[in-house]
Amino acid sequence: MLRCSTLDVSEGQKGSPSLSIPLRFLSRLLDLLDVTVSALLSGIGCGLSLLSACSLAAPRWLLSSSSPWWLSPLLSLFSSLSLTLTLFFACSRHSRRSLCAGSLVLLVLACIRALSCSSLVRPCFASEHEQSYKCLDENNYNRDVCAGYFENYKKCKEFWSNLRVERRRQGIEPNLPPPEERERIKKDHSREEFKATIEGVAPLEISPSTPVTVIVHGYTESSFRSWIIDLTNALLIFEPRSFIILVDYWDLTTLSRPYMAENVRHIANQTAALLDLLNEEKGISLSEVHLIGFSLGGRISGIIGDLVKAGKIGRITGLDASYPWAQSPSSSEFLDASDAKLVINMRTSPVGSRSPPGHIDFFANDGLLQPGCDKWYFPNAIKNTCSHYRSVFMLVEAVQNAHKRLFPSCSCESWEKFQANLCDCQVTNHFGLFPDENTHGTFYLTTNAEPPYSRPLK
Image 1: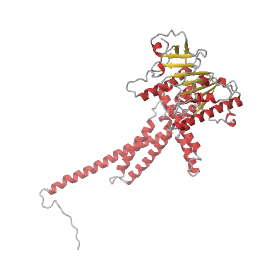
Image 2: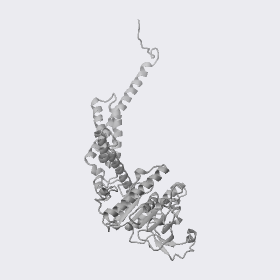
Image 3: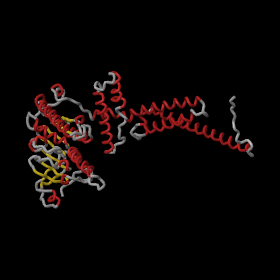
Image 4: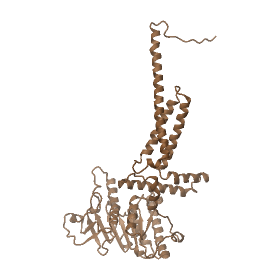
């Protein structure tokens, strides 16, 4: 027969009754502390959740221009964390079921607030993102059918990311525009995609007298980079009648050099075919077309100049145009003076130092290392990248001040003689939209470390 008994360790010990009193007191004290903390956190959670719920009714107040952009998401995060702790204590054995149920409701409200806030701090969340997943639901999760929706979502994210970076650089607060301003901003930066077909160019508002500029971005970039947006806006402000074509080959970028070389030819072929088509369908003259190419885009511009059949490109501006990775025996693989009636190079880093000469070659600070990029703690890769991108910022500055003649440059035999003031600088030129097209040669200039980069000749 089994028997169960409890061993009383206090039996036979003197003073055991008095020992149980402090233990019971301590237990009740801990219970009281538990209930107090639970009630305190419940109160805090209720207050935060109510404030968070109120913010649902007044998102414009939270994201007004006078309020910091981080207020709404921070409030939602803090409220959710606090309510999670509240739920833990409210559902403990010391609390009533009604308090536990109330905390659950408040936690759900906080989560709803956080989700709604995500559409406020993520401009593409409520439109392009939702449309992408709606398409997947309607098409049995066939990603090929919904590829266009995902492409729009990707471009939307890239657009707002670049805009946020640009506004931060310009000191505009908040960095991400509030919802009520986004539609206007999107219209200001509107662009239309088209293909190099007769149907694709038919709706384009281009006449034979329309100035046409083609911008080709660099390797690993896209047409949504902030410098391209700035340059496009500056060109349109200077000449509102102009038509800007942005060549975007982001989807063709690859780390494989053989494949990228093949893609470069494909990009150049498509763009050259487009220009020939515009000549045929819209009557534009290629001699009035201006190609602007940065880095790999400069080399692509040179190939385009070789491939067009309707005439000679009027002008190509190479911004630190790169040279083929592998030695190429054909001049059709890089930018040189034969690719357009006027080829202008701005050299600012080792990336563009190997390209053949154009008609006018500008060397900023010897074309190797730019002021402001020469910090001692910068590794060489950072120095080169910083110097490389200086070329695009210089062109943006020149176009934004097109009525002035910025970046004066001196014709000289070498950078060393220019630095030693051994050149009389009787022959000068200016980098920008309006250089002296009849004054060819090599020109040297110095720049500032920070904007404005243009500085007078010594």
